Image (tube, rainbow, N blue to C red; front, side, top):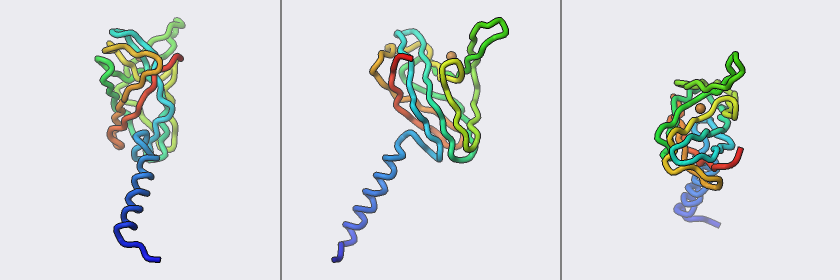
Length: 147
Ligand SMILES: [Cu+2]
C-alpha cells in the first residue's frame, strides 16, 4: 500500500501540532509553570498569584510579570520581620536555577496584582505573562480560587 506524499506530510504536520499543543503555553525552553492560581480580590484592591516554575533546562532569571487585570504587577517576597510581623519585599528579578523548582506560595514568593481593574471572582481565569531572561515570554491561564 502506497500513500501519496501529501497524506504523509499531512500526518507529519498533525503529529507535530499535537506535540506542540501537549507542551502548551505552559512551557518554553524547558521551563514549566505548574498549578497557577490567584486569590479573589475587589476592584481597586490587590491579589496575589502563586505557581511553581520547574526548570529542566539551563539556569534562567524571571525578570517580570504582566497581566491586564491589574494596574501594576510586581514580583514580591513575603517575609517575617524580627518583630514577628509579615512584610513584602519587591524583587527585581528571581533566579531559576538549572534542574530546580522554584515555588511561589503563600508566605513566600508571589506575583502581586495591585489596583485590580474589575476585581477577581472565584471561577474566573485570566492570562499572566512571565518574562524570563532566556526563555522570553511565557503566558499561562490563571484560575481564581479561594486559598
Ligand atoms: Cu506582595
